[in-house]
Image (cartoon, rainbow, N blue to C red; front, side):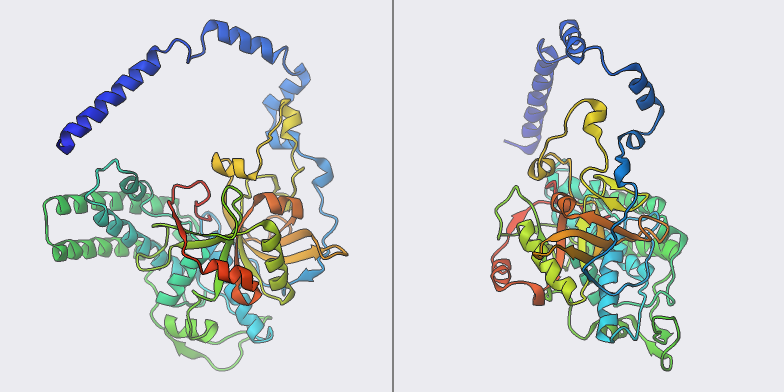
Length: 470
């Protein structure tokens, strides 16, 4: 049976199913059901409450006023402070958090006598170029599949984006190096990415269709590769206009924490600067990525197919752990003045005015006369919660028995946001809405290191938990 006939049969079956659904007398809201709905809803809220909710922001009315001021800012374990950055209107939190860890490690290596501030614009250029190639090559690799295949739709639906993870930052830094922010400062579009992203995405979709057509017409592999190279040249030109041409060589003198230059300026390439500040070896392989997903068995590793920054780079690979293990590794790292990349669902219960995250910041249930009772596993499974934002874990406060009370993260929304650029979260909130942690292997127990070495279980990027950090 030909693919064409199979497609016609599938369309016919879909039409029948649609007609049956439309003709089902029990599936819609009929007048009797509407009357029952109204009766069960009752008289509704008092007029004063209805007027208040209709005329004011929901969060203002649900806010717990007892949590509008942070009075306890003491932390028993805290890493060395550093400058707060601002990602502005971009989804590059993953890069900001990764750079926070990298520059903190550099300062620690030099006993805080030297500081470095990396250029986000520089690495973002190559992040976008690499993601463009990943999309185009993915389209080529899947060109034998129909246009409505789930994997093909993945590439056309998400041709490029700002989001990412720590392993992506590591892949990019190892391949293209790093430069100081003085060598390549931010541009307007680096800080406001939406228009650039839309235009590049549109062009990639157009290119993707052309590549599929070339494969269908059985063009040679070399011809397809040559055409893809030409397409990437167009993307390179677009990125150069909005982000600037990536610097290839620069002169730089390191500075101390007060901003004074230390030593004589020296000429670097980006790769040389990477080696000078991060060492000669790769970052990949020095850490594990832990996640907390109560839907799945713990102490198993998982890998997300296709969800990476570079075609020749690393897929996301995680070991799934209970929150108790994640907390202990975090405490071990912080105790040795080592910050950690971490990610959360900051859309849940964040009081932005003071940068406080607690489960009782907002009482939506009482306001609407209902409850919101899903647990963490149920929230993940139904797309109600997942990792939305990366921040840098910097401090923890422990009780007399060594158990965490609260945590502190360095954010990338500027010093005017939250608590002077930081967010403070209760341990209860941390357990419910923390998802990923990148831990240097020296702070990982042997049992977990061994579990992380097992063959991973492959999962697809459509899984609810595997959205990128923005």
